[in-house]
Image 1 (cartoon, rainbow, N blue to C red):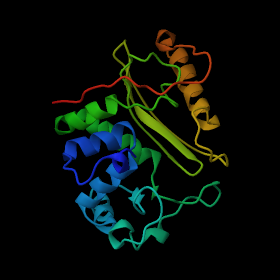
Image 2: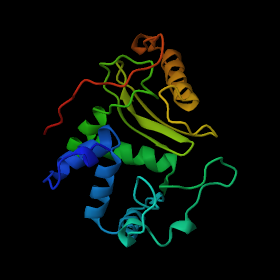
Image 3: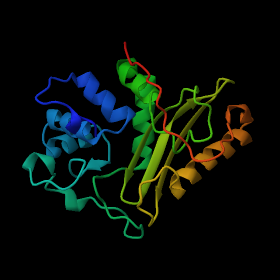
Amino acid sequence: GVLPGWQMPATIALHDLVHLMVIISDNSATNVVADLLGTMEEVNDRLATAGITSRMRRWVGGETDAERANDPRRDQWSADPSLPSTAGLSVVSPRDHHEAMWRMRTQPRHRTVWRMFEAQQDRRGLVRHLDDELIFARKTGTDQGVRHDGGILPLPDGRTVAITVFTDVTDRVESVDHPSSVAIGQGMRDTLHLLGHGALVVERVGPVRIRARAQPVTD
């Protein structure tokens, strides 16, 4: 994350921490927000109470011995043994990911956070072949060999495409043109062509770039 490079101590608004957590997947900001919510055990109890099956096993960014940073029940939550990667930071289902995104889109109380998702900076996956100006609220993530990207795209004809993709491969090198990211982008491109919205597609030449244009998020 970017926070380790900041001069400390510093007072940072919760809004700004969540903003960093969402738009650039800042691990340090994620850990601070998780710590504000309580211990990992308390965070997972809240998820269970909300009917969410996904669990956060530990803080992001490496192993830590801090009691608050690990859920003592974490070994109960694991990935399918047939997958290349073992459970790391968390165990998340595509259904939970989609339902969380849908709630934030449809419930007015989540409007500010939803706009953060609309400002997502990572363009390696679903938006790889889409116009830079297209608003597509998404959340991406990587851990070991796992790559995921999921969000909700309103189409010009009034329809909505909701898509969540999780992949797991043996290639764990973090790169802009990781095979999973390329495949996710191609799948989104082909889906839009099949739906009759090929005009939203931009056929890029060469490696994809990471968006650098800042997007303010306000109420």
